[in-house]
Length: 352
Ligand SMILES: [Zn+2]
Image (cartoon, rainbow, N blue to C red; front, side, top):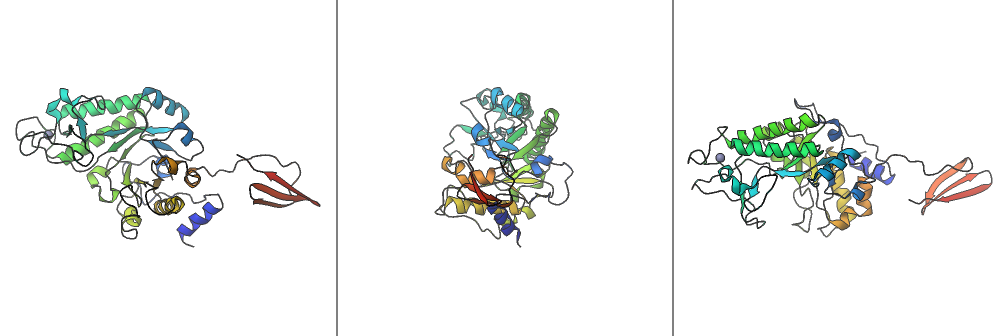
């Protein structure tokens, strides 16, 4: 029996018995066991949405001491969103007001401030690329990560991890660089970030998003515990499942270094398929590779009964003691358990 069929069979029985296995040999920087064993995770969830799930961690959570402190107290590993790629001039993000530090902005070949790549696509006006190769900026973002860790975070979700544009800041006399290349500078910033995380939580992790885990450079995998495949099979910009499943989505595990983990984030609810079909297809595809999966953030999908089923714990739970020994039966039909004892047939309504 193929493993996909096994998973579906297990789901039909309401028990998920496949133990996730660690892929390949552990790398030199081992990821936490809870991360290796995770099956699904929470993406910006409410506390109510966390209840009843098997989630070992949640991402895109508030940065406040109240939230992160409560998450730590409840035993929920919380990963706030951060980026080292860009900052706005007009506001304070991640404890930094960029207008006070224009020397931290990445400089283009013409000597101008480099605009974010999302300037037009997401109308991110007045947001500029920052230079991870400047000492002041690197120290400032690390100080912010330290603040989050002190508040109770289990690490950070670091977005926009891709090879930075070249910075002409040093050549044009705008600022000094720590490393010969932007790649080395960003990789070192990731190394230092993970060190800060581990200092406060030895079981913490650095989760990153490059958009496509399959093409993440080895330099950036080194200090990442977990990558991400965003818009995994389902995305909000397509009314059909996109990409080549056989060549692309199903082969990511061959491109992720052994011992590392990957989050498959599907934005379910935008295709013409039924939500149920897309949920099960995306979930099974991700789990075939032992990757972690989320159905995205569309409210009606988050609350869908099949989404909740896939997120749920599958532990056996005692609902009630039988008043008489169950001699025969024990079948379940239309919300009732039927069983027999002697010449009597009993039934019991199962309610949540
Ligand atoms: Zn620079």
